[in-house]
Length: 69
Image (cartoon, rainbow, N blue to C red):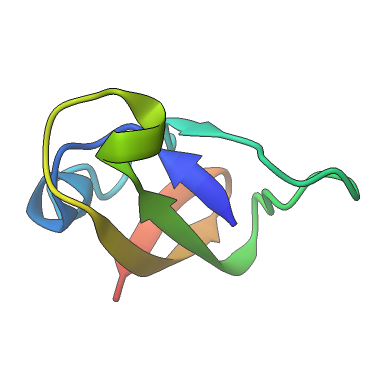
């Protein structure tokens, strides 16, 4: 699961149409898809950043955020 750099799910949704700010965590190859869906997480306890922990499904189209669920 990739880690995203947004303090809340609301902040992630406010970035529709923009590139995703993320960190790959998989040891088995890249999880990012410029076209497709995948799960992401924000884990402040691990990342050391502000905000709350959340998980989301992100859909990308053309390398930009198209939807967040």
